[in-house]
Image 1 (cartoon, helix red, strand yellow):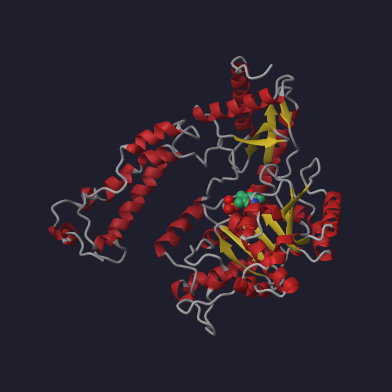
Image 2: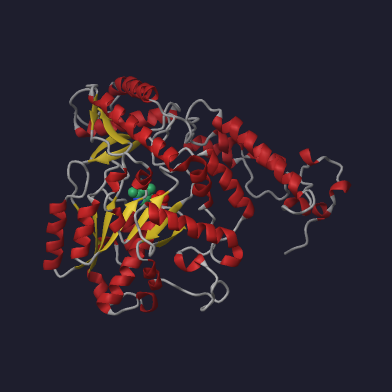
Length: 517
Ligand SMILES: *Cc1c(COP(=O)(O)O)cnc(C)c1O
């Protein structure tokens, strides 16, 4: 490293300014915890950060400032990202204020678009601890207690989902990575058994062209993404029709399996979804597990969204069969209310990990007895995200979490009733968890007009900062979606948003561009 610039090597006593308005006079010592002045700098910075978050973010009445991409581009274009000379921490923290002011208010009760949760205070506190301690989960000597705590957390999670002692797993960045890991292990096992090929060593054999992954039409796009990354190609994913409740249709699955067999294609993995992103629907997991056993398929369950039902006495039944999954994905940054990012990949038979084990002489040399988690993850340097659910579970308990989840599901049912009773709206599907898909449709109109109108309503709500609502496409026609994750959202909040939608819908209807009759 270069010598620190001259002004940095000054000791605090030489500085003429107080720590409060230090300009760029931070000393090398005060830049780091443990250094002289570092402790004060940390405390001050964390206090200022807390104040800034509360003042510029949490206090906002509306879930979004309404700033357009152009307005934000303009605001930031003037701002130097990498200035020649530092302005000091106090001032630097202030320059982040427009970011806070124009962030989407995830904790606002009228922010109900995506599977994007209001983070719990317990998780935010844990987040501060895990970033300050900065443990890295790849090797034990970089994260001694953190490694052991993550191992314990994975054990109890395996237990929560009905796995026995052979279960194993690891924390991940989220569902994308967990789904990738499930399909990666599925691919390795199949290639070993069927072709006698160690794909990790030799790459994919020619016959891998015939390998197929099955999932429903409503499955998350990361199944296809994983297929692409695994060298199988997106075309290796065969989607199975879903029924009116948006669950995988078993007849269609049986038909598809028979067809694949006839065409001498090689299905090796079946992905069930417990909580589809759009509808929250849950595939019939027990029946899927049966088909998987029958056809020797790896059964992966994507429970990124619905996994939290395991905490609810009232709704746990919906996950029945998940304990038969070879692997599963669960996200804590969705219905478990933990700050991003935080997910886990769980494996029913931990010995399957042998397919991807690798050893690096500097991290986990062969024969080392220390518990190094690097071999269980596709990441190397990795955050200690397990601390967040740990602190939150301890704070709230399983029943506390269960009550939150139950309340959001009850709200979704009430909202569905409200929509069904209002002739200006069309409820697209009965909610399973807490996602409600609907359209504003005050009278009959063309699909094109209906799509335009609902999208225009969504945009206008966001632009005015009134509510953050999602859009999706159902059977080729745009629909609106509430994802009611926030336990603080009330039926009155939702009723207000529906009023706003009707008002906007009414005025937008008169300005529909002349693209169709
Ligand atoms: C959110 C989600 C994913 C993707 O997970 P990330 O945490 O965003 O990586 C995958 N599957 C389902 C069903 C999801 O809801």
